[in-house]
Length: 247
Ligand SMILES: NC(=O)c1ccc[n+]([C@@H]2O[C@H](COP(=O)([O-])OP(=O)(O)OC[C@H]3O[C@@H](n4cnc5c(N)ncnc54)[C@H](O)[C@@H]3O)[C@@H](O)[C@H]2O)c1
Image (cartoon, rainbow, N blue to C red; front, side, top):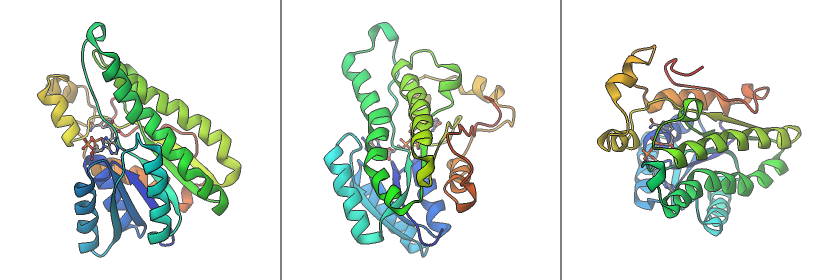
């Protein structure tokens, strides 16, 4: 992977953070796009301290002009990005009958439209290179649904559909597009959901066959495979990494 440049959205924290570290350790030049620019720069600096190549940029995935500018900046500084991992996401929970249109739109704008816009912005460069890898981080919640999470679960189910469409459309361009729906992964997002009482974690753990909560590195390992050269025959797939909870 040493000749590749990767963009990881939401790469300043949690799953995106672990993916950024892993891809850099595997030899990719990594650009971290995060709405929290300082955190993105700090995460990139930590990668560089360990001998990797990384830059952090303040990019809000709901701002298409900002995405385009970020991709141009990455191209100039690290070389054209041909790997895109969409991990930026938020969760807002609440009873469906009380859920506001503003909250619905916010969740969809980041989790779904943000993912689409980053794909649309990065794909032309991949097509020109005749090689590309896109991994969209969806959620295992789309397998089963989660009460009081209509916007989040809808956005993540839609990301699965989007992944399948893009895989079909760009397969002949050497671009693979896959999605990882993580199960429960120990990150700041999960901490927030636990604090908000969204999940009964003891019950969830009891329903997890491998008997542990996942770590961000579990997702990063699957992602590292999907963006590798040897995964060129894997596209349009939903690769669950969830301790066996959903199959
Ligand atoms: N943690 C879990 O258990 C779990 C389970 C299933 C799916 N996921 C998904 O994994 C992805 C990563 O989640 P995480 O647990 O690492 O969460 P996290 O909160 O630790 O990280 C999310 C990152 O996205 C960034 N972000 C938020 N809005 C953004 C925007 N508009 N533009 C750019 N960056 C933005 C945040 O600043 C943060 O750095 C999310 O898409 C989430 O839905 C997480």
